[in-house]
Length: 426
Ligand SMILES: Cc1ncc(COP(=O)(O)O)c(C=O)c1O
Image 1 (cartoon, rainbow, N blue to C red):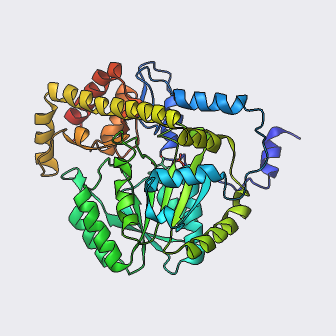
Image 2 (image 1 turned 180 degrees about the vertical axis):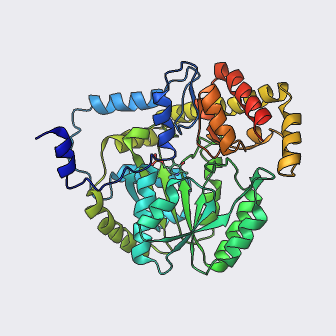
Image 3 (image 1 turned 45 degrees about the vertical axis):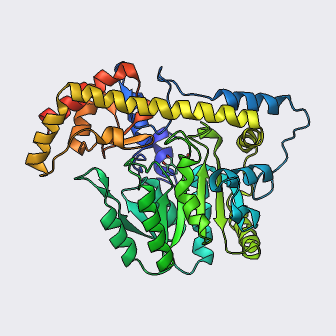
């Protein structure tokens, strides 16, 4: 039988080619480009100044300790994962002195990184929460709507980003959440909003909290960048802690992909803060019912690394130093790119372009105002395509660039490309 008739006979021959994932597809296209000047700013992963992936020293040390410990075995973990990992993760996000933890009102389950934590949380809500609508910011991380839809929730947007100011559309956000049905779920990025890099101020968070609590809206925090945004683990958890401090309920999905560089280890946690210990315990029993038929129980290695680091004072301190260094390098990239664009007179050019085409004054200061891994440049799809075609610079078509993928040597190349894109395409 020939290869082609094999193909025709396949019971799957009707299966159509699915599109590449819009974010991961950027790396696929980058890998295919043979040009040595190419630059990948699509990838949501940290790179060193040399453009290399980074394994934190503290992670290497923790792994070595695990390998040296002959008493360690590879048995299955419980359905909800490693107990030490869960306890330490809850403390990390809610604070070591959290009353909710002390009162046993928090249930934490180890999940497959941030994505898995969101999915388990969503499945739980779909089964056990009376309101099935989740409001997500507009725009948001591309996987959010798919995760929630597939779990059986209905997804609606709330206004978040104002392209004119390149900042928060706070009024729009308050109006949309104010108009949401009582009890609706609201997805909030705990810090370093992806893709915009725009976060509410603490004052604005407080107003959001008051509005949401007054309407009985249920907060579901996505915390994928704790410590990675400002360099401080505590500062980056303020939004979440504010909501927990008022005694109300919420969900929080944590990821250790970025802040510990454990991307491929898939380490994360879902916490549900309840009103009483009794409810928390029943909620946990139902989380097990969600997890068991999905993947039975989570992997042991990555969670063990995290548990070792979070429980040992020296390792923990070493981690905070390395984490701060990553955050600082990203902040320095923002500054260098901003300076390079200023030097090219981009502020004037952009102002000129924007006044004509979107009637808004603007400059590149959003690059240094935005926070976290990404800058939402404001470049449009055509400008992005131009930069990829002419300068071999890869990014998502919404103009989001990963500052973590940039380094000092590549800043002039990127500034040239942005300059050319803005100059030649309106
Ligand atoms: C906002 C946001 N949430 C969640 C995630 C989940 O990441 P992971 O599943 O790798 O932890 C990401 C990753 O890019 C993200 O940006």
